[in-house]
Length: 179
Image 1 (cartoon, one colour):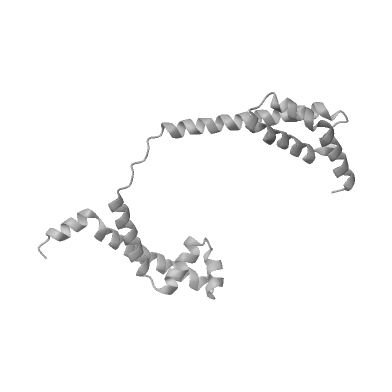
Image 2: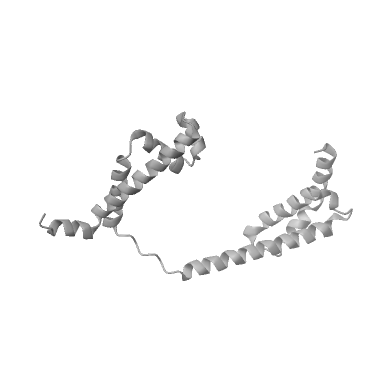
């Protein structure tokens, strides 16, 4: 980036900033003015070579386009808010059920060995790929994929069993069974 371009753009900005800001101020909500003016001059910076000698009309056209984009974006946001307001509120989860699910997950996770637990945490909580987790654990990728498959299978099995035991129907059934 040459110093000549910086100097020329700086002069363009100083010369036309007030006019562009006034133009935008008359047409936008006060909270949008700074964003639209900044977007206008960002586009001017990126397309500096395309700006004609009489730059103000080009800048105002760019500002008008930025305003239109801003309005469309605001309209989409408002429409989204309306759609979200129209959606029924989800039912609040039962605290007893949520507590039972949390306990089931803790029991299932505790059923894993230390190495399996570490591998699951690296891949699911820390977001590592199996290959990256292998590097952390000092294993090869094939070993890691196999261990991860087994750990997930164990976790699913233990979690399913723990959830079955923690549901109110299962608890009530076991309390009334003669055995």
